[in-house]
Length: 293
Image (cartoon, rainbow, N blue to C red):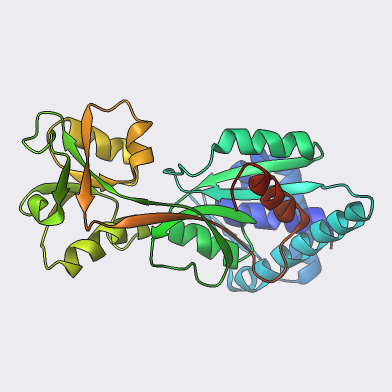
């Protein structure tokens, strides 16, 4: 059993495709298939069920996969720890972010990290806060930048607050309230909203605030993209609540108005609470050097 074989198993399970897994591993499909077949013979078990349309794990494959991931992580950690003795940071930093990060200039921070640690690689994944924190807890990401209601503390991970800001009401420029200095949540009652998907942490920021004031709202449009939400508002189809930094960096033709007694969002950096990898510790140090806790 070789580490490369384990890596191929993990990639096929992730991609649900031998072809895409081979592309991600920069090998031919035949070479990847040959190595997995050799591993299956060694184990005496089929790890994947193959069909013309899809690839899925067998029961044996489901049992084998977490151990394969753990072995790869242990091998990577051994390499990193050996390099750390000489003061080097090596390996791949798996960084997750929400699409509405405003607390840091992320390209600048990543560039500074690469300058400080040229032997390290950075892989970036975009997702919602709940999924990113789950990936940290499962060992699939090293560091993530997430956004939560200001009164919520990330669970099951180590974390630091990067920024907290009150959400603003985002309105079409021609809206009757667009010129107001400040409005109340109740002023938005009865309006059609665009917002993030139900049960997401991005959506909870507004849902909880409206529920606390006993105000019902009509969320007719749900989207994962802040730009799409802003586009719906600019078209006069809806209103929304967003972090002011998200609005200011957009070119959408909208108006932002402060909301009295409205919700606030905190951005956090989160990482493994038990044994953060050296690449994660190095990234946190760079982040702190750029003026963030």
